[in-house]
Each structure stands twice: as C-alpha cells, then as structure tokens.
Amino acid sequence: MAKSPSFTCTACGAAHNKWIGRCEACGAWNTIVEVAPLSAGPKALGGKGKSIPLTDLATQGASPPRAASGINELDRVLGGGLVPASAILVGGDPGIGKSTLLLQATAAFARKGLSCMYISGEEAVAQVQMRAARLGLTDAKVSLGAETNLRDILTTLDTHRPGLVVIDSIQTMWLDTVDSAPGSVSQVRAASHELVTFAKKRGVSVVLVGHVTKEGQIAGPRVVEHMVDTVLYFEGERGHQFRILRAVKNRFGPADEIGVFEMTGDGLAEVTNPSALFLSDREKATPGSAVFAGIEGTRPVLTEIQALVVASTLGTPRRTVVGIDGGRLSTILAVLESRCGISFAGLDVFLNVAGGMRVNEPAADLAVAGAILSAREDVAIPPDMVLFGEISLSGALRPVGQTENRLKEASKLGFTQAIAPARSKLGQGTEIMVRQMPDLTTFVGDMFGAG
Ligand code: TYD
Ligand code: MG
View 1 (cartoon, rainbow, N blue to C red):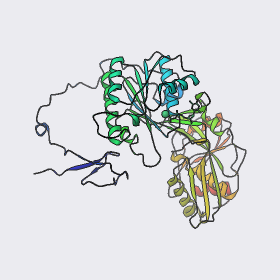
View 2: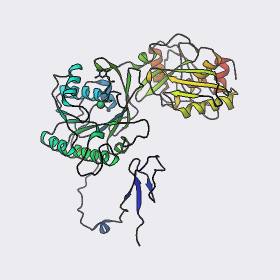
View 3: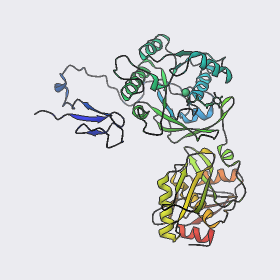
View 4: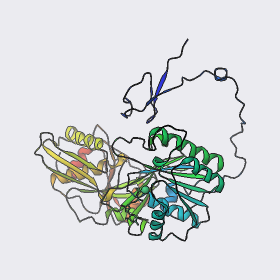
C-alpha cells in the first residue's frame, strides 16, 4: 500500500494532509512543505542503525556549575546562571536593545573568566567596537567577529572552542547547503539546528538573537523555540525606558521569571526594585487608577493599572488595551455587565499598564475591574490600596497563589490596605488590612456604591 504524502508547516509545525497556500493553524503563507511519511521500524529504514548506549537516571558526576554573569537580573532569568552547553534564544522587536543587552552580558561573562565570542551578522566590527566603547566594555576579553556564513562561523568555533558564543542575529545567518535566502524559514531552521547541535556536542553555550516582527512573525524565532533549552523575550514599550527580559521557556529554571532593566545613555542598567519604579510617577488618588499586587516568576511586582472610560462617538465603542490581553478586558466587561448590571454600551474603554510593563496573570482581573469602575464612576481608589484576584465568569472572586508575597511587597512599599478574594490564604503577621470579598457584586457595592 502506498503511503499518502504528508505535509507540515515550517512555521508552526502543524501537520496537514494536503498542500495548502496558507497554514490553517498559524496563518502563515507559503510555509507548507512535503515531508517523508513516517516509516514503521528499523527494517523500513534499511536496518543499518546501531544500538545507542543507554544509562540510568543517576548522574555519573556532579552537575557542571552554572556561570554567573554578575548581572543579577540576567542570572535570575536564566535560572541562576548560564548552564554549560545550553542553547538560548533571545527574541524581541528590532531596536528594543537585544544587541546592547548581549554585548553587556558577554562582557560580564568574560570578566568572570568565561571565554566569550560575539559574532555579529548585522553590524560591522567597527560599529560593535564603537558601541562597546560607549558602554565601557572595551577591557573585557571578548572575541569579536562579523560574519554571516555559518560554515565559517562553525569552523571558527571548532578552532577556538569558547565557553559562550552569541550569534546576532539568527536571521542573518546562512548555510550554503540550503537553497534559500537568509532570514527564510528554511535558513533560520537549518542554521539554528547546526548551532544547537554544535552547542551540545562541543560543550559551547550558544545564544541566538532573533528578531520578532509584530506582523506575521515570518521566519520568526517561533521555529527556533522548540530547538533551544531556554527562550527569553526582551520586551518593552517604545517611548519607555524600561525593558523586561522574560523567560517563556526554561529547561533549567522557572519559566515566567523576569529581569527588569532600564535603557540609559550608558546601556542597560539593572532595576533591582521594579515595583518602586513602576509606581514612581503615580499621582495621588486619581480616578481610573488601581494598583495590582502581582507575581512575576518568583518575585512580587506591583504595577499600576490605568483606565479611561469616555462616551463614544463610534457605533462600536473602542476597546484599547496596552500591556494586558484584550480578550481579558472583554471578559471582565461582560461579567460587569451581566453579573453587576453595569453597562459599557456607548462607552470607549482604554486600559493601560503603566511603565511599559506587561501583565499576564489572571490575578490582575480585580485590579482591571477596579480601574475601569473607578474611571466610569469617577471615584478614586484609595492610593494606599492594592488589589488582586481572578474574576470567574459567574462573577465570583477566585483566590490566587502567593497571597502572602503579594501583601509583603505591598507593605514594603507603604501600602496599608488590600482587597483580595474570600478564602485567600493570608500569612501570619501581615501588616496590611485585608478585606476579603466573595464576588464582584460585593466589590462594586462596597467600593463604588453601585451595582
Ligand atoms: P539595539 O541593542 O541595537 O537593539 P536590537 O539589537 O534589539 O535591534 O538597541 C538599539 C536602541 O537602544 C537604539 O534605539 C539606541 C538605544 N541605546 C541606548 O539608548 N543607549 C545605549 O547605550 C545603547 C547602546 C543603545
Ligand atoms: Mg541588534
């Protein structure tokens, strides 16, 4: 029986049973390629394999130590330092500061005695040197090269065997064995595969820099994500100086961990107390503002959520969000409407997380609702109050994790009261006055006298 051909999307990996112009799973165009059908066992492959050596779960020796860069915000996101022979992807928008971060990181690792190499495919050697001079990194022993031909880069790596190599960026690299342009899915995939395999075989840690484009992500780092051990995204809003390095996948540490940096004239500076920074320019008792006591990875972070609710001139009112998932806002508005009888018909709603921070936690629901209601009713939430809690579709408030850590951080920053879901696990000796509420209706009635 002839096997039917099978097709796969090179952007997202989805399987299809026929060739189509646009992948139904991820929406990418022209990414479907035919792949050889899966065979059934070694005989079907020709039977020439050899048996691989197997071992047991106990390690043979102590695990190799991680290398710390001394940049705490980076080391923590890596899960406590750089794991030898690991492959890391650092993705982010063009111009967000990836090259700056990695040049500083490479120099920091080099100063700690790790042999480091920085290969730029985007800038000339002189440009990188100028940047290094401006950042005060010229004393660090980093081997610098400008090249895009991967065959030459791999040969160089094999000769010098550094502890760490940064490839900036993976989209500029090309293999002469692959018949398509640099930056295409096949090139990015093949180049990443070569580099990651090399990292594992030769014990070299590899950092791949990848540009993410907002529209489409063509040849974006998505195809690379599966191949590497750690995926970090460097994010931030344009016009804000804060940059957040976020671990979205980490085989060697917790995901969701963030490191906070500030882009200054002298490069990226660590921000050790992000809460203070995100709240620093908060005005006192403004309607439309609520402080969310959040958790990012292992660290509590307070952020200010701002809302504006105005009469709409449009047939379909505007819902504009920055820093929070738009779907989440729609859900909260729907719950307010159906469970508390507060309508947003004919009203534009704008929502924003201050400071260019992105909030992904469902625990932010209550603060979002608080900010929106405060804006709509023109009633300020007390400036010394934090809020957290997940809103369910029934309008109930669900307890969230790490209540104690959230309250501790809030207390440390001078907050004296909090609103949390009923049955939250309060720790011993919290100095904050916590009001626990079972549902959104109670919250609305209590805070705004409406509902
Ligand atoms: P860059 O690291 O080149 O971004 P990417 O590699 O992600 O494309 O950073 C570019 C931006 O950073 C540029 O707009 C200038 C700014 N910048 C500073 O503000 N201070 C600095 O010290 C440096 C080196 C860059
Ligand atoms: Mg760059």
